[in-house]
Image (cartoon, rainbow, N blue to C red; front, side, top):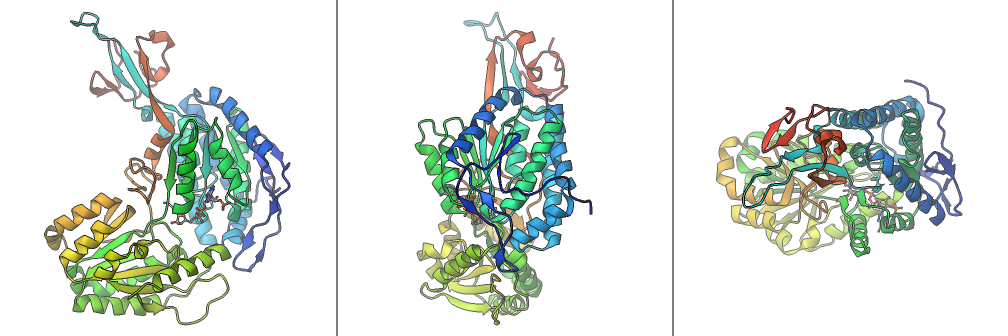
Length: 535
Ligand code: NAP
């Protein structure tokens, strides 16, 4: 592996091209494997520093919003290069702040770099602005038709909150940041306190890339915080125009409410928790019960269950096959060696949320790792409840972030439909079945599709491919706006607004909308998709 670039963890805030530590609140990150604090001390951003970052971002926006796609692409590719240049230092810091293994760090870094390069390609090509042109008809009666030209333009400075469980791919230079920068929005990251060192290293890579590619100062800042105040102040700042959030329902909802109460409400794109229902149909159980039990034992425990797409709910119709599947799943799941959770607070939340469900009436544990694992390791657990109890008790629908799944045994097809009708919005829904039996369950499928952003056929919900057709989002409460995806290049749409020019002189139009189409992008001209010049 390459050696680290000249970056080091200072514990300070990165405000434009300066580092700064004016605040008095300090904190450390924690190594959950070693069960001890990590060395560096971090300085929480003060109010003054928050205002400095926002003021620089506001100024940077005026030039950044019009930077050509090629230059933005160079910036995004340079961020990817600088992240790779951080070498082992980044990987070691990541592991020491999360308890996640090096292979996961390498994989997540690869995903982060891929996301940055995908957005670079998108903005370099340019058609993402969705240019639409309706040329004038001056002699139309009774009124002449004006010339109207529309394209997507960036919203302004945005704040990004990263998730505890993806220190790279959904944090400092993760999907939200890459998409917002690609759109032309300066970004201020509210660093996640659990991986502040990883965050600072990545922030230094973004800043080095910005300087190398001549971006305006303030296009990116990284602010530390150990509590919620820095994030709250940022979301309420009048110059902030949108918020990206990945985390818990509680956190996302609080920020959504805060943004709605501002004098100028702003959009909050929050991707939150989900229990990702998995429906096991009878024929699948008959023919593949054993294989499914093994696969699901893996999916429930992968990454210590710390994925927003973890299968937290498995539903089926009570039968001999379902009993057999339950038994097999129980046997398989306890064979898996427990792994470390991200932080003692996450482990505590896991135990608390798991106990809340297990203490509800008629919930029975059917499998639990039998031995006492190391500190900060989680005991994987599967519990069972009837469809009737599940339907009447919304507490059982809540996410338990960790290696936990609740199996719901419904008495018949109607009860299964009712259970799906009663669940809240989810990121994903999975059907395990044979093609021939799917027709019988059309209504169930239709109910499921109302609740989710993505349906999976005969697979597992864990594993989110980064590509334009991915939808990672879903009806509330899995996200705050089901019209957008947080993963894939389509996520750029969250950071733009449509803007029209009416009867604007050709020479004053942006290149995307000029008659001669100098960028050669695909445009909707008088209702026809074309790259042609307008004569
Ligand atoms: P979290 O506790 O909500 O924290 C996320 C960030 O938001 C942190 O920086 C936190 O700051 C901040 N925050 C939380 N509440 C806040 C409030 N009221 N006001 C201002 N800021 C606030 O979530 P997490 O522990 O990082 O992640 C675990 C959760 O994320 C799980 O529920 C999981 O399902 C979900 N998740 C969802 C996705 C997805 O794509 N949908 C992906 C990954 C994870 P402090 O820590 O400083 O308080």
